[in-house]
Image (cartoon, rainbow, N blue to C red; front, side, top):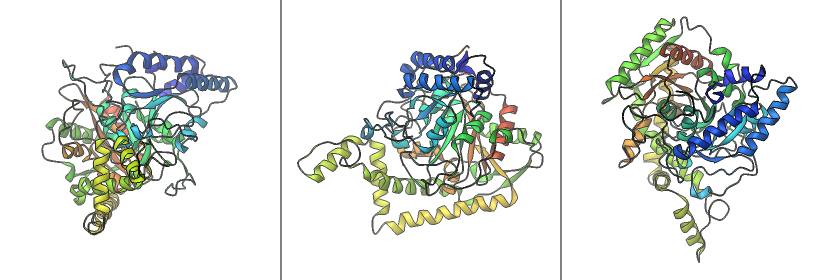
Length: 492
Ligand code: GLN
């Protein structure tokens, strides 16, 4: 079925005239109609725009124009502003927000001929690891534990994007990653995701969570597909002051690079208490695969790793409290009328934000308040510099790092919900690279004893996504991961 193809195969088929972009979009729209009511992975589906885009892509193909993503149907995380298409950030606050402009990343994808199927669900304002913090209901992970129908979480915050890609309801999707929101859901859903270097993809037009950490990136079923998407998404943007002006390499070409002599570090601090033995075993298999591919394996130490989570959960809420201050019901966001202005602010924010967002705004305003600023925020920023220094030191001896992506496989809806700290522990392996701005790629590497996907994470030097793609491709080939989730719109 057409919706099972990889992006690379889709491009070949379209260019060879084996099928049309309209047929490809229609296959996906049919799959969405069949499965999305169950998965709740798309918040908004845009069939008319998709078919119009596909017809335009067919016309371009007919003229012999081979745009980089000409005719490829994608899902867009509902955190990217899309002109004329509701953009909610999965929050009541933005429930009826229709942006009058297009984010830079989605604009670039459209320019390269991509076809947007709709907007994908997420944790409200990208805060979460389970997609259960959405104001519009949780996303169901298309994967099931063997012999058990319990609904599992797809991870978060880009849980809708991960689910639509895994279930074959899109060929690829955009995500954003602040502390792991591309990599952890990719691991939970058995797909590939890369958080590029901070500054590689423009944040312009992406609803802000924590601006010094937020970074858009692609999610797809193969490493090569992520490479193809990233080439279109990345690049300098004068409208984002932290965007970096460097040429965008041909990432797909990098997937096939030789790994002879590439030095891969195994950070000893990522061996945490209570990590399931099968994740440790998978990590060791990953080490062996890379050694077989010609890499040199080196033990390294990132001594400040243990402070990653604690500092992230100060810095990210601090920035969120400042970014979300704009939703006051006056200029931005849902308004609840009240007799006084203060009353209007309070009623609007009380009604517009969910409980996790409120928790983070409270923590953030607390750590930024006078008297606590030095003790928490400033201290966290200092530790952040030490975390960065750990990575910079590591790059003197190795070219990349290999770790597990997450300390567990997907858990059930309802699990880990009673205790926010437990939920935050999901990010233990992804957060340090976020704090340091380093790129990180998650690739599915195997199944656990319950038949659920597990991911390995490759971290690399700033702006060296190419090495990540080469290493990711080697893991992908060695793992030969072909798992298909229980809920999918394909042929079993
Ligand atoms: N799970 C992390 C959090 O809740 C990361 C979220 C993200 O990367 N957007 O903050």
